[in-house]
Image (cartoon, rainbow, N blue to C red; front, side, top):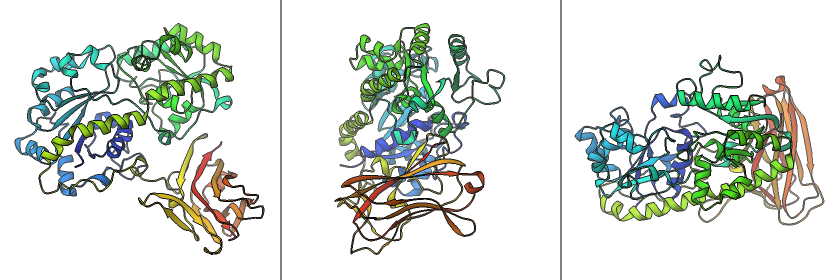
Amino acid sequence: MKSPRIFWLCTHQTLRYEEVPLLMEAGAEVIPGLGESFWLKYDPDYENETARLYPHWRKSCTLPTHIVEKLRRIDILGKKGALTPEEASFFNQWVDVIFISNYPEILGNVSKWFQGYVVFRVFGHGDYTTYTEQLRRLNVNIDQVVANDKYVWSPILSSLGKRELPQLSKNKFYLNAFVSQERLGFQWAKDQSQPYLSTTISYLDGNPQAREIYEDFAERFGDIPYVVLGKNSKHAVKGLSDKVLGHLNDQQFFSKIAHSRMFVYFGLGSNYHLHYTPIEAIKMGVPVVFLEQSGLAQEARDHSVSRAKLKTIGMCSNPQEMKQFVQSHYHDFTALEQLAREQSQVLGKIFSRDAALARTKKFIDDIAPYVSQHRTQQYAQPAAFNVLKKDAFRPNVIHKDLPTEPGQTVTFRSENIGSMTGKMIYNHHGKFLSRRVEQRKDAPGMLIAEHIRQLTPGRYRFSIELNSDHAARSSLGAFSLGIWNPQYSVLKSQTISHVKPGANTIELTVHFTPEQADLLKELRLVWNGGHTCEYTHLNVKKLA
């Protein structure tokens, strides 16, 4: 089966991180369009292909680079989809599917000339408006848009089509919202959490509705410590409240949520819109309080979760009830941990990546006959392999991606960590499994030999899981971290002994002063050759 070639026209960093790898794993080639500056003023690394959150979509793309870059540099956003005949012909020659998110005017224009599948990827506007109203206001001919049998309605919430013309929501490809733990890097701090609430309200500097939501929140929760996160200019919110933090980078953003006591989701007060933040909070294990009239609750109802059940896991009828719920749970960590577990069990299954992947694979299977018929030109070979999610991004490297915020954990695969002995083990599909040293086969030496340059001062925990086939009481070696100044000296070391069969957690906790943070450091695991073992990854957590 040929891999469908998708041109992904959306300006949303979180969505790109989550959905582009999903489409690739489902078997598609994906070419992301270039971003739009208006929506990217808070995302300076959006087009930086070396950034950690930039998906490696080129791995699965079989088109030559000059064709790919010509496609990406056709200003489809600036022209609102009204391309010249030559540009439209070029798209029709090389692209099978165009995903268009939230751009009704572009949808109208693209549907006039594109011969492949047009997927209208929609997220809802709350109760303010509908896509039907937007299309009519822009004088877009809805009948012409949906006349093609290759038009597809793709909502992020199952019930978004209820407020639209029936024909606009035809050929439904429901692709649920989901988030990935590895992007977040934090877990809820539980009884180490700080006594404040967190919430997210963006665009306070230019959106009157956002101001109204903030003012309502501030009035209700003014006597409880809180922080307001979101995409807000620090200059614009300076006079609003010191509790509105302005835009933070990802590490600071997720750290604030993970260290809060609870996350309060006001949303837009509508069943027809959903932000990613409450799903991210639930994924991190942070207890979430949410309104009955919200996309979060509506999606649960659409999956047959009863109102009675939702009331037990944080759903409230109105803001006043939300405050009462917060006050009754705020200092009860047993109740909060139980709430977080139940939210993960109920809502985690609904906002599931596995479910989204299954739906995406079905969509790709459904359009396969058209792709096989359409893809007859020279560069028609399918991708040689489906790219798994873990392969869709630049791997974490220790000199670039160390944690910077307390509570943040970063995982480094052992294939990307320096070593002077042993071998890397792969399965028959070429998938990396572990780095392994074998008694009487490998020379004694450093199984880990990695230099660490600058890091943020503070306390860190370095940990690995050392796997062994059988027990060994005697020493295997030592796990240590030292510093060069100018000679090498050990800051912390731990002898590795009394290994049990299976996984053995080996940890080092080290505090770095501001002076030490700027010096060259070296992480070592010295293996003495006396016992066969292996490890798959190194975890680094910033503790303080």
